[in-house]
Image (tube, rainbow, N blue to C red):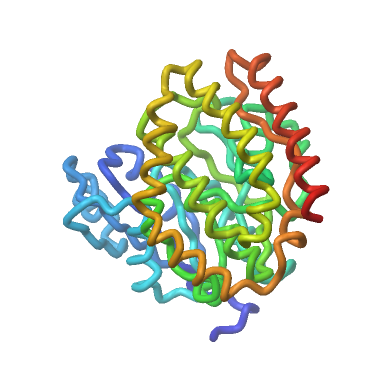
Length: 346
């Protein structure tokens, strides 16, 4: 392995699915940096020829084309082909600032092995935060610190976080090999939550490095897309059922039931109760895969749940949309349930 005192090659892995102009802008910003890297573009069977256009405009990229859309699992192709000592998962709808990669590498050298994310600001917004580090609630409910807030430097300190954003995650190939590949059971959403949590089982921490800055095409008002929320709910439960020990799940079960009743009521209010029901039945369909996954992950764990849960937050921020008042009440209830649940386990 190359010494960390020189600039080792970093493999930047970007997935594309009908990325259009966004993917071109992303790649252009990456090549505006002078760090020693390779850029691996994995195309998930795009129909807009954006992958071909990018290859012509940026001949240095390494392009792999899938015959079908396999979701975020396609990152595993990049991992397998990567030649770098370090790996970056970067979303195709991002733009990176100068020295973003150098600052992540410097932070890794200074603070040690782990998963790292930059400060993520919203594209086309006046310094509005998308994520200043992602956090996990005891019920597997994730949220992005600072989401929708004006960046006034209040999140300019390096710190430990729950998990790194899937929009940009930096680590070493050594850490990737320890944690393993992206699990195809997710397809999309909460794969980053799962990856950071799996790292925690192995005593591998996640960090937020504000000196590194990227921009992301997102909105702080979540769009109520049924497919998206089906995957979010189903995948959250896959994380709970496989990453917690059975002992912990038994302790949490009564409070999880209370929370699920509340979540179901919320979905009813959005006329999306069918999404929650569909997610439940899909978990039953995946039962054998979930059991197998749980056995595998529990065998690998190096620290107990109570140590991991100590680092989970009690706060939960659903959104910063027009329904802030309603969401604030929900967040307060979840926070109270979380604090009570922690007392049962820690």
